[in-house]
Image: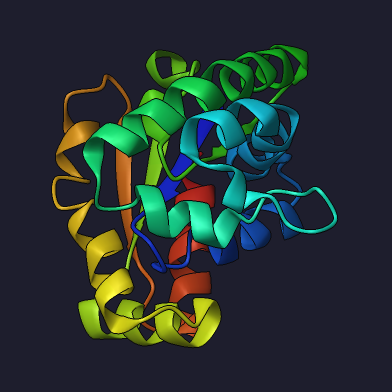
Length: 189
């Protein structure tokens, strides 16, 4: 069974992924694959988005790149055209190699190569203010930048309603409640 896991920015999907992994399910973090693909394609990114994204050690300044593309649909689409093909290939290969239940953890799950093959989708939600404070504390971005990222996900949930998979919404409003909700979902699988 192929399970998708997603959620808006700072809703807590990675925490849910850790809970699922602790319960024995293999979890693929597609965002990390995206970072690998981004690093592999960094020369293309430098040429398309600016050489000032190159740090002194030659690595890509992902934070600066994020500031440049989030909130700008054209630039975001251009970056995704560079990163997504490689990430999708790696996701497809990983899913094909699994036996039994496994989880694909992806912020942009609806764009994943395995999206139409998902049996279940877990959407992690959290109250707006909770997400706002988590984003500020974790990423140390400006309030404006955080709100731009939030705005880029305004139609987030609707993308998942048309797929032929069972959907579970899990609100992350406290760790003990979250663990109980995850356990209940796993009981039904």
